[in-house]
Picture (cartoon, one colour):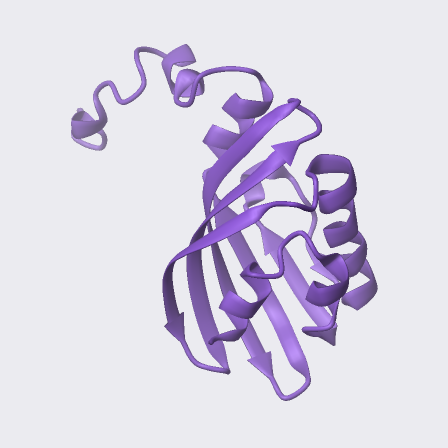
Length: 149
């Protein structure tokens, strides 16, 4: 089992997650959400605690879809499902974690997910509605992207 998978499978348990981190851990999240770069075990641990107290309930589920790598560099793709306190509903989205680790623990985490789906969910819109709001139905003209004069 890779460090990325060990971390993903501990989602919802900030104490168990923290035990995996090196003191100088860095966590990056999709830039489109505006979350700052988190540096150090205190900042990352506080963020994890906030996610599973203020944002989601800790009784989330993670279903691993893909895993690659070794103890030094690994990646995992998974479906995350949790109760959202903001939306008062179940949230589900595919996530990826790219992790670098060494004998001192996890040193770097890059987290990615479908931010448009998350924004639509939190706004109470159907998935893809944000795309539709900028000119058409969800998925319209995808085949033409990058091909127009």
